[in-house]
Image (cartoon, rainbow, N blue to C red; front, side, top):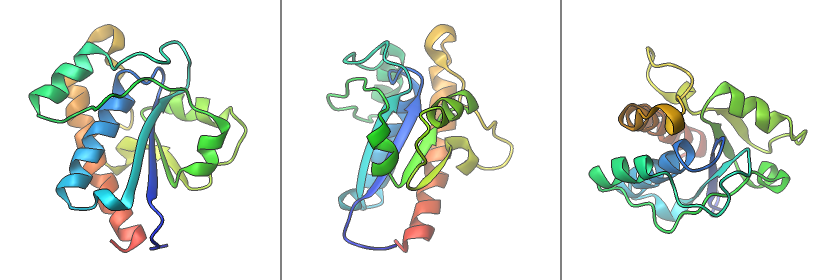
Length: 160
């Protein structure tokens, strides 16, 4: 599938203020480090609209700042039907998010899976939601493992 068109990657969680913007920023950081930034279009959204327009959660901001990963001017957005047709890779943070995506009733144009399916064996398959319980450092570790495996998967699929 190697063309000049950007490879479009979308991360999805419930509100788009904790896990998915963290995954978006981490994946962008890893892609930039691999010298592939020109080949990717990376974004994140939430399945619900509660936080649309808000900045990422302070816990997400703090952990990314600690690792010197930039968020840019990210504001929460809600998943749309058009996203299903636009993105090559749609990565849900957990099974509930994946179920919510499927409730849209629009088949994904590309791959749609949980992010941690790309993490090394021994990791859980769901990224826990730190909104109520904290645990942003653990989420960062899981997201990083998933993003590294995802980039390897995409490089193999796309011939990068």
